[in-house]
Image (cartoon, rainbow, N blue to C red; front, top):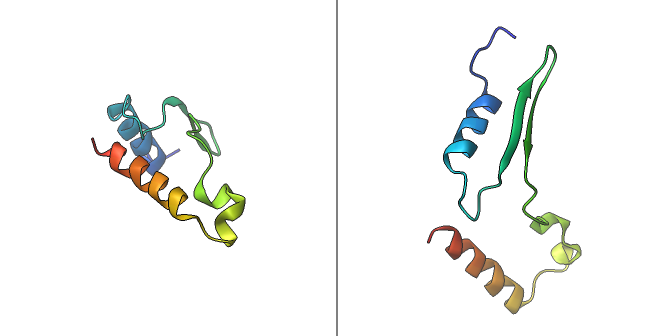
Length: 75
């Protein structure tokens, strides 16, 4: 509790600043208790590691779809 500005608090502030962007999850809350702190945010969807095909590789179409999603984040 001695730290006034923790890394997680900084991340919460950054998420607030970037709120509304397609690729940025919505921040639901940040809190700090005696022994821990927490950050609650929107789950945007499955990660690549959650996909069962991760061990087998991705098809060309899946790679193209991921690429399109990445490009959309910047425009």
